[in-house]
Amino acid sequence: MTNIKYIFPIIIIFFISCNNDLQTEIPDSRTKIINASEINIKIKKGEDLTYKNATIMGDIDFTQSNEASLITGNLVKHYVNSAVIFYDCTFKGTVLAVNYNKDFKIVTNFNKSVSFINCTFQDTVNFSASDFKGLVNFSNSMFQKFVSFKSVFVGLQGMYFNKTHFIEEAKFNMMHINGNCNFSDAVFDNHVLFQLSKFDNPVIFNAAVFNKTANFTKVKFFDDVFFNYSEFYKIAQFNTSIFRGRTEFIKSKFNMISEFKNCLFFSETKFSDAEISGILTFENSIFYVSDPNNFNVKASEESDYIFDGIVILSKK
Image (cartoon, rainbow, N blue to C red; front, side, top):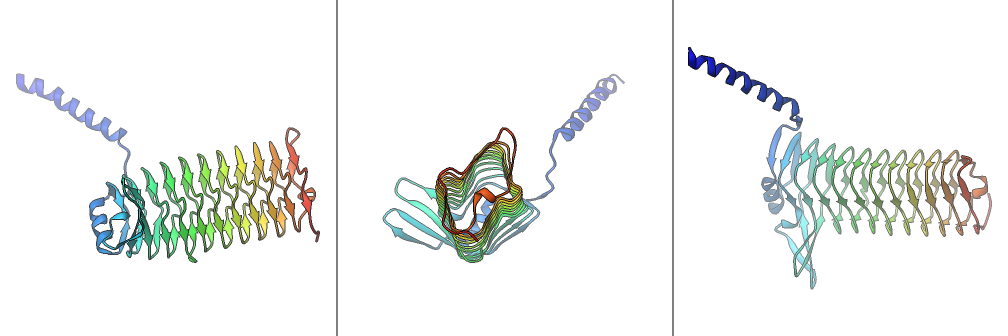
């Protein structure tokens, strides 16, 4: 009887402790556990990667394929011949397509489509200097750490980041996108960099939200570009950029400082019903068709709408 008297409270404490653990544990709906080593082996063999509703443990490294070539004295390119498809997956480790050692920079060429749809990345993602021959699709995904697509080339099938959420800094600078590019409904919580990128076909940022600095300086938009209903909460920089196609910022919101200085606008440009609660400036920009005097923007009393030094070469 004495033993039972002491054991019973211990059992109660045990169940209380377990219940507390269950309450504090965050469930993961992606219940299938996949070790990244399995994926890395498939990359080496050139086998297709197709995963759904899984949690990936460990680091994925696309620079370990068996097919590689020396491009220059210190640049090695690996070729991934696998179709890469992840749907509704969580990545606990890093996802890397670029690597460095003391002698070489190692980059990756993807010969087939790369899709990470409705995925969550909990660590760094780095595809810098990658070459994508097929479709690139990260729609409806979330990046919780730093992400980089710096200096990538994307072919005619294009790049898609619709409804994607970037929590930390994101780098898309110095890209060359040959196909369509879509960031509609994307949310950037931190700084995002598109500086010096080139877009050969239409670009869509409709309803995108930029919560910190959005740097689009010296970008070349060779086709139509749409930022309709987009929101810029801090600094938006488009200085010295080239807009060759139709350009629309209809009903966009500019909340702090937005700069379009020294830009070239070759086609019809619309800022109809755009809301300004800070500074919006087009200083020293050249317009071949449209006139910023007629943009019909909605400026608050505290805002400044500046178009000093603009040049309008022709009017419709």
